[in-house]
Length: 314
Image (cartoon, rainbow, N blue to C red; front, side, top):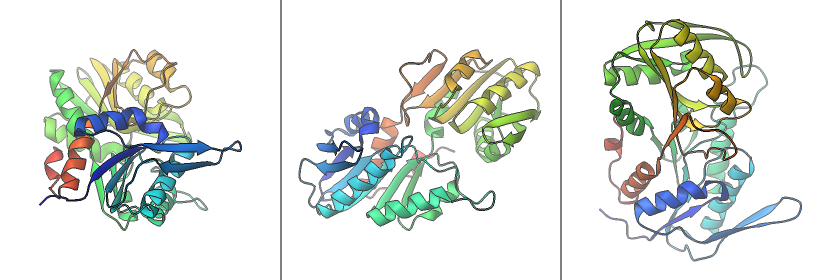
């Protein structure tokens, strides 16, 4: 079964670098759109070509600032008002995903609010990658295609030909993800346990599992200030690990993250291009693997009503 509605790709300003690669991999040009910014910072998004009757894919990661989310919402609304057949939000990085529950009194559940905003704007489908918590899919009343970076990371890990691999989770929350990797790669599992005194700072850390004589591969969904990751790496090297590598899908890398990675015992940090690296920082230890081909392939399958389950290897 094939879709007889034209397909069009558009990008938000923040994700143009990735959108161009996804469109190129898919085999079409990015559609023309523009943003007019008023002097007070308000902006208006508009399409500079017809989208009537088209299936519109809008590609935008919602990392900082908040403008990226609002620009995506405006583009969804504009596409609907221009009589698009279907509007799909492609969000390689889904911001606010860490706010998936009330972990203390009187806080917002930001991920649910973002889901409500997207649905209110009129999105017909959402495509994203490595949500901080899988259950965020349930916040939506429209289909969510949730992709995993494992289909990119696992072949790379295999290509390293490391002996004595131990897959590590940097915290208890990542245990499920790390366990899936260790089962697939038939390797041992290490879980780091940390005590936080306050958000973004770790006071002490221990490792559960055998580290000595192992090539440790830490798996995480995102790397923000890199405090936990670098502390885990240094702790494991102190316990006799042969090497420590880290794989994180979303390179948020805020605050002192770049400097921490450079100064740490991590031999290599592997990330994807869901979020662009900063050009003014030393990225010599960081390797970027692209998600463009994976997103292009899944968009093609979704557009042509084909199953995407073959894209999941773990």
